[in-house]
Length: 220
Image 1 (cartoon, rainbow, N blue to C red):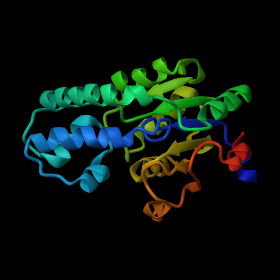
Image 2: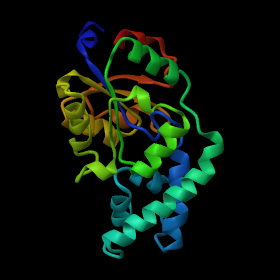
Image 3: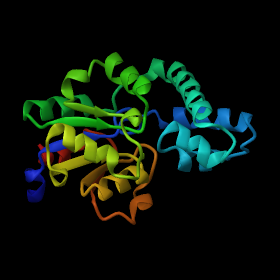
């Protein structure tokens, strides 16, 4: 763990990483896209639930909708998701304490998410977390989503931290790939995916079930 002591910033994905909500996103997308004739299985929807909303629609129903139509569809999907998830909105166990400890140690933190600001605001304002983060990068801030490195590189730039000095917290293979492409190590929380699904990535520091894992103390 000695090399971890040199890390200077923590970058967090949001959905599935800070809050355990990915099943709600997957179900919302599954219902909406199948209502449009996608005939997609829940397993494939799980695999495709990454990147910008308009990218999700285009991957599953290519060429059928304009960008404006896909963005509107994504916004409607977020309203369905928020209504379903709000009664259960809360941080993954141990995360609030971990964030407070990192803040106490003056470790800069950012959120780098493929969610639109509408969804990020829903989470961080309802949970009163905004003051803990020095930067927030959403789908609205990038031209190419994960696994492209732009999201996490922009987080590092906004924090004025070298990308190599950042640790990314992620739950999805494409997010870990984004971190790797940005030259960053990653901690994987296994809310939705199993460790074997990350076998192709050599930048994973550890797998955790939640933020009560005592190994995280070594990052502070």
